[in-house]
Length: 328
Image (cartoon, rainbow, N blue to C red; front, side, top):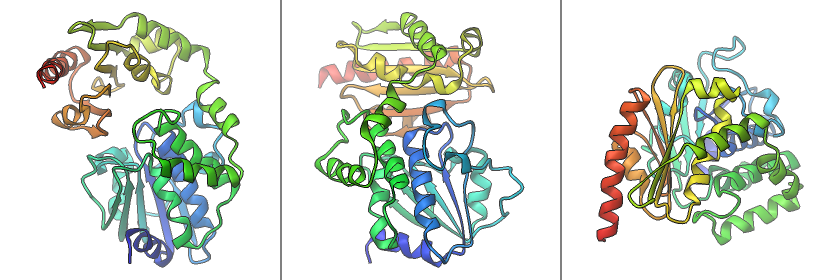
């Protein structure tokens, strides 16, 4: 029995199932959760099925089919314990946020992910670091589950793959990725509409935030390092929200001289979230050093420090890595 069959069997045996994705949800986390929920809803064996979101739904992804059925972890309609809890696109249990207790309370757990830093925290761990997205892995679950690839599932999975490959431009994009996407298009996913929703429909506050933070960016080491800071004060001044930050790190990474781009974001608790993007240097190693993780060229971490102290600590380490990379 391969891992896809094993995961499918665990789902088929469960009467009550709850689905989670990571905090600060992105297209892969949301698309994967919604697609899996619709897959499982086709099974007669399941009589209670919920999908949970931690935080607000980003404006970008409000078009996704089924998004209105996501629940907060404190909703009274949720059970205290489920037969099976499924974590998607989540490298560690900490990334479940305030939904972690619900995950821990389940009688059985399943973890499906593509992060290289995933620490294997469930009863069944289906981890494929070479997959372009968790949505790509979930496509392989359709056949062993014996469910139909509906248009809604196709839209959700295509969105997951599109966004986690950066519009098919990251190195995790492979021939298998396009083969899967071809089947998703055949099932009714509209690539033009999905691309427009994800990349061509930005609120004014988001554009203003990107302009301000890029203009304020600081360059180091012959412009090989670039970083910018986003404080709560700046967000309030522009009337922007946390999900409007998406894409800033990637925009900075596209500068031709840059090896590592970083965004430091002050959280509402006064801690600091750091996003890394790289052109070749393994930033997952840096993020892991600070308790985070992710992928080789795209990672993140959360430090229990104010933004200025975090910048000092992280940039010191990043400079060492860039200098080391020059030598090699």
